[in-house]
Image (cartoon, rainbow, N blue to C red; front, side, top):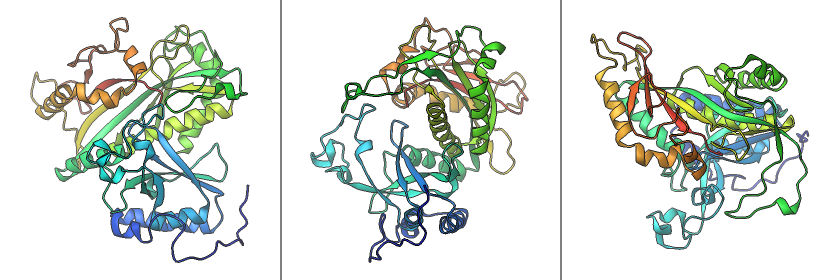
Length: 407
């Protein structure tokens, strides 16, 4: 599809998106963001793209997206983009979780009353061209109320606030990602209205078949069986600018793990969103179905999860502050304090790490490599926090297992 460049929208006193001047007044962009936005606007004018996908991430970690014509995206870089607040008040099944017309929707959030709109501001530093969708761009957005304050339920904003707290102390949060998913072959592509669900009721699951028999951990032959899918997928991830490290076969049939080189905090979270979207959409376009849920209701499927490696570095020198300089001490005092905070807040954090019932199917003594207690241990895969490192090791970190979920 090519949009004719000579067709101009009717000029009005209000831009076609958001609130005029919103980005300049409230977004507090860095010089790098402003410069990148100017470059992107030029690319829109040059006709490089037919459509831009603008996504924000809801509290469940699911991207919500609008497709914008190039000239409208250029407007959104100045004025933001109107979005409904609905995804912030719905559960993972799209059922409304609060009373929209109660005062403050029952949670002291008056801006949410009546399911009003908010303003999404594209972050130009996250812009990517999608290899599987020609002439299509993709970008993540930050969420603001129309008053200019940031949405308190925005996961991206919550992470940014914590990262900035560390930055003020001269520290950088560093993560390593290891993410598992199931790859199956689609048997039936056709849908009927009998497959359709409703609010709070999922539709019919796709009909699939295994791509291999599994249960040969890191089996070379199993990887080769899916090479025609996995090799171009890995190439796609590299083309997206994701720092691919490895691809490997886990235990279950078609259970794949992809790992990445270390990333700084916000970039790591953004990478997870882009990675999952890329895998799902690339799979669907090639006759496969990819699922990140913990325990698919399929025979012989070992639960999936993902590992989040965490460490803190000195912002100036890059020195890993989890490293111990004390003989006989596994990690630094800062690292011990960090682990203590994770353990103390483990129960509350599970609302975010494992937001669905399905995820808890991994937290079982029958799955020996999944934690059932909040604790830490030296290189023990059964612990919630696995300490990787040793005294004077320049790269110690904490690896935490997180149950996979459908998002």
